[in-house]
Image (tube, rainbow, N blue to C red; front, side, top):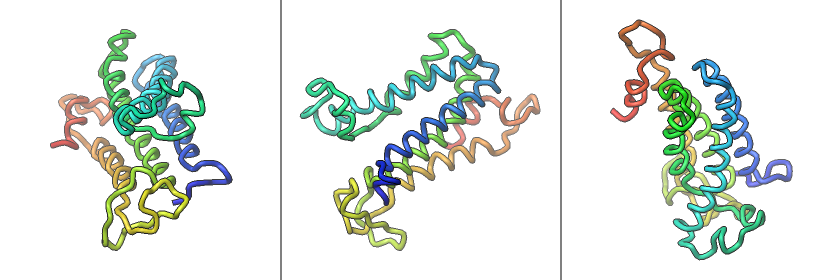
Amino acid sequence: MHRHLFGVESYAVFQIAALGLLVVLAKVFLRRSGIPLRHAAGLTLLYVLCNFLAAKLLYDFVKAKGQHTLFDHPSYAHFLEGGYWGWPIAFLPCALAYPLVFRIRPVPFYRAVSFLLPQVFALQKVSCFMAGCCYGSKTTVPWAVTFPDDSLCELPGVPIRPLQLYDAILPLGILLDLCSPIPSLSGNRLWDNDLSTAASRPYA
Protein backbone atom coordinates (compact mmCIF):
# COMPACT_ATOMS: atom_id res chain seq x y z
CA MET A 1 0.00 0.00 0.00
CA HIS A 2 2.93 2.32 0.65
CA ARG A 3 5.58 2.01 -2.01
CA HIS A 4 8.09 4.01 0.03
CA LEU A 5 9.00 3.85 3.72
CA PHE A 6 11.23 6.63 5.01
CA GLY A 7 12.23 7.44 1.45
CA VAL A 8 13.22 3.85 0.65
CA GLU A 9 11.37 1.36 -1.55
CA SER A 10 9.14 -0.64 0.81
CA TYR A 11 9.69 -3.74 -1.33
CA ALA A 12 13.43 -3.56 -0.62
CA VAL A 13 12.85 -2.93 3.09
CA PHE A 14 10.70 -6.03 3.54
CA GLN A 15 12.92 -8.18 1.34
CA ILE A 16 15.91 -7.27 3.51
CA ALA A 17 13.80 -8.02 6.59
CA ALA A 18 12.92 -11.43 5.10
CA LEU A 19 16.62 -12.10 4.52
CA GLY A 20 17.42 -11.16 8.11
CA LEU A 21 14.62 -13.41 9.37
CA LEU A 22 15.97 -16.31 7.32
CA VAL A 23 19.46 -15.81 8.77
CA VAL A 24 18.15 -15.85 12.35
CA LEU A 25 15.83 -18.83 11.86
CA ALA A 26 18.46 -20.81 9.94
CA LYS A 27 20.89 -20.42 12.83
CA VAL A 28 18.26 -21.38 15.41
CA PHE A 29 16.81 -24.40 13.61
CA LEU A 30 20.08 -25.79 12.27
CA ARG A 31 21.71 -25.50 15.71
CA ARG A 32 18.72 -27.30 17.18
CA SER A 33 19.13 -30.00 14.54
CA GLY A 34 22.78 -30.51 15.45
CA ILE A 35 23.97 -29.23 12.06
CA PRO A 36 27.13 -27.04 12.01
CA LEU A 37 26.29 -23.33 11.79
CA ARG A 38 28.39 -22.85 8.67
CA HIS A 39 25.49 -24.44 6.82
CA ALA A 40 23.27 -21.55 7.95
CA ALA A 41 25.62 -19.33 5.95
CA GLY A 42 25.40 -21.76 3.04
CA LEU A 43 21.61 -21.75 3.17
CA THR A 44 21.60 -17.94 3.31
CA LEU A 45 23.88 -17.73 0.26
CA LEU A 46 21.62 -20.15 -1.60
CA TYR A 47 18.60 -18.03 -0.69
CA VAL A 48 20.26 -14.84 -1.94
CA LEU A 49 21.34 -16.41 -5.24
CA CYS A 50 17.90 -17.90 -5.89
CA ASN A 51 15.93 -14.88 -4.65
CA PHE A 52 17.79 -12.34 -6.71
CA LEU A 53 19.82 -13.87 -9.52
CA ALA A 54 17.60 -16.86 -10.34
CA ALA A 55 14.37 -14.92 -9.73
CA LYS A 56 15.58 -12.14 -12.03
CA LEU A 57 16.45 -14.57 -14.81
CA LEU A 58 13.13 -16.39 -14.41
CA TYR A 59 11.25 -13.10 -14.66
CA ASP A 60 13.25 -12.00 -17.70
CA PHE A 61 12.67 -15.21 -19.62
CA VAL A 62 9.24 -16.32 -18.36
CA LYS A 63 7.30 -13.17 -17.51
CA ALA A 64 9.06 -10.73 -19.85
CA LYS A 65 9.38 -13.43 -22.53
CA GLY A 66 13.07 -12.77 -23.06
CA GLN A 67 12.59 -9.29 -24.48
CA HIS A 68 15.00 -7.57 -22.08
CA THR A 69 17.16 -9.94 -20.07
CA LEU A 70 20.11 -9.81 -17.72
CA PHE A 71 22.25 -11.14 -20.56
CA ASP A 72 21.27 -8.14 -22.71
CA HIS A 73 21.84 -5.71 -19.85
CA PRO A 74 24.41 -7.29 -17.46
CA SER A 75 24.60 -4.56 -14.86
CA TYR A 76 23.49 -3.70 -11.35
CA ALA A 77 21.00 -1.24 -12.86
CA HIS A 78 19.10 -4.15 -14.40
CA PHE A 79 18.36 -5.51 -10.92
CA LEU A 80 17.09 -2.10 -9.82
CA GLU A 81 14.49 -2.17 -12.59
CA GLY A 82 12.53 -4.71 -10.55
CA GLY A 83 10.88 -7.83 -11.84
CA TYR A 84 11.60 -10.90 -9.68
CA TRP A 85 9.59 -14.08 -10.00
CA GLY A 86 9.62 -17.74 -9.06
CA TRP A 87 12.62 -18.00 -6.76
CA PRO A 88 11.25 -21.14 -5.00
CA ILE A 89 11.44 -22.92 -8.38
CA ALA A 90 15.21 -22.64 -8.09
CA PHE A 91 15.56 -22.73 -4.31
CA LEU A 92 13.61 -25.87 -3.42
CA PRO A 93 15.50 -28.31 -5.71
CA CYS A 94 18.79 -26.80 -4.53
CA ALA A 95 17.70 -27.15 -0.88
CA LEU A 96 16.82 -30.80 -1.52
CA ALA A 97 20.25 -31.43 -3.03
CA TYR A 98 22.18 -29.42 -0.41
CA PRO A 99 22.56 -32.08 2.33
CA LEU A 100 23.47 -34.70 -0.25
CA VAL A 101 26.19 -32.52 -1.76
CA PHE A 102 27.66 -31.44 1.59
CA ARG A 103 27.19 -34.82 3.29
CA ILE A 104 25.05 -33.74 6.23
CA ARG A 105 22.04 -35.55 7.67
CA PRO A 106 19.20 -34.80 5.25
CA VAL A 107 16.13 -35.29 7.46
CA PRO A 108 17.13 -32.77 10.18
CA PHE A 109 18.14 -30.32 7.47
CA TYR A 110 14.84 -30.69 5.59
CA ARG A 111 12.95 -30.34 8.87
CA ALA A 112 14.76 -27.08 9.65
CA VAL A 113 14.05 -25.70 6.18
CA SER A 114 10.38 -26.68 6.39
CA PHE A 115 10.00 -24.70 9.62
CA LEU A 116 11.87 -21.57 8.57
CA LEU A 117 10.47 -21.05 5.06
CA PRO A 118 6.81 -20.21 5.90
CA GLN A 119 7.71 -17.07 7.88
CA VAL A 120 10.07 -15.92 5.13
CA PHE A 121 7.45 -16.55 2.44
CA ALA A 122 4.87 -14.57 4.41
CA LEU A 123 7.14 -11.57 4.93
CA GLN A 124 8.06 -11.55 1.27
CA LYS A 125 4.40 -11.38 0.27
CA VAL A 126 3.93 -8.43 2.61
CA SER A 127 6.63 -6.69 0.57
CA CYS A 128 4.60 -7.38 -2.57
CA PHE A 129 1.50 -5.95 -0.92
CA MET A 130 3.31 -2.79 0.12
CA ALA A 131 4.70 -2.26 -3.38
CA GLY A 132 1.52 -3.27 -5.21
CA CYS A 133 3.01 -6.04 -7.32
CA CYS A 134 1.62 -9.58 -7.63
CA TYR A 135 -1.89 -8.15 -7.24
CA GLY A 136 -5.20 -9.95 -7.61
CA SER A 137 -8.19 -9.53 -9.90
CA LYS A 138 -11.02 -7.00 -9.82
CA THR A 139 -13.64 -7.75 -7.20
CA THR A 140 -16.50 -6.31 -5.18
CA VAL A 141 -15.83 -8.24 -1.95
CA PRO A 142 -15.87 -6.07 1.22
CA TRP A 143 -12.16 -6.66 1.90
CA ALA A 144 -11.07 -5.49 -1.56
CA VAL A 145 -8.13 -3.08 -1.63
CA THR A 146 -7.20 -0.24 -3.96
CA PHE A 147 -3.64 0.72 -4.76
CA PRO A 148 -2.47 4.30 -5.36
CA ASP A 149 -1.18 5.61 -8.66
CA ASP A 150 2.46 5.39 -7.62
CA SER A 151 2.23 1.67 -6.79
CA LEU A 152 3.37 -1.16 -9.06
CA CYS A 153 -0.24 -2.26 -9.50
CA GLU A 154 -1.46 -1.86 -13.07
CA LEU A 155 -5.01 -1.27 -11.80
CA PRO A 156 -4.60 1.77 -9.52
CA GLY A 157 -7.79 2.96 -7.85
CA VAL A 158 -9.66 -0.23 -8.80
CA PRO A 159 -10.93 -2.55 -6.02
CA ILE A 160 -9.01 -5.82 -6.33
CA ARG A 161 -8.46 -8.93 -4.28
CA PRO A 162 -5.53 -8.66 -1.83
CA LEU A 163 -3.87 -11.71 -3.35
CA GLN A 164 -0.57 -10.87 -1.68
CA LEU A 165 -2.19 -11.16 1.76
CA TYR A 166 -3.80 -14.46 0.81
CA ASP A 167 -0.34 -15.68 -0.20
CA ALA A 168 1.09 -14.42 3.10
CA ILE A 169 -1.55 -16.15 5.22
CA LEU A 170 -1.26 -19.51 3.42
CA PRO A 171 2.32 -20.37 4.52
CA LEU A 172 1.52 -19.24 8.06
CA GLY A 173 -1.44 -21.62 8.03
CA ILE A 174 0.87 -24.42 6.88
CA LEU A 175 3.31 -23.54 9.68
CA LEU A 176 0.47 -23.63 12.19
CA ASP A 177 -0.50 -27.06 10.94
CA LEU A 178 3.10 -28.26 11.17
CA CYS A 179 3.24 -27.02 14.76
CA SER A 180 0.10 -28.87 15.81
CA PRO A 181 0.62 -32.01 17.92
CA ILE A 182 1.43 -35.06 15.84
CA PRO A 183 1.47 -38.49 17.48
CA SER A 184 4.77 -40.33 17.09
CA LEU A 185 5.84 -43.84 17.92
CA SER A 186 8.63 -42.57 20.16
CA GLY A 187 6.35 -40.20 22.04
CA ASN A 188 8.72 -37.31 21.35
CA ARG A 189 7.58 -33.75 20.75
CA LEU A 190 7.04 -32.12 17.38
CA TRP A 191 10.69 -31.52 16.56
CA ASP A 192 11.42 -35.25 16.72
CA ASN A 193 8.44 -36.31 14.65
CA ASP A 194 8.80 -37.87 11.25
CA LEU A 195 9.29 -35.12 8.67
CA SER A 196 7.23 -36.79 5.95
CA THR A 197 4.25 -37.02 8.30
CA ALA A 198 4.46 -33.37 9.25
CA ALA A 199 5.11 -32.06 5.75
CA SER A 200 2.31 -34.04 4.13
CA ARG A 201 -0.44 -32.91 6.51
CA PRO A 202 -1.15 -29.52 4.85
CA TYR A 203 -1.75 -31.23 1.52
CA ALA A 204 -4.00 -34.01 2.79
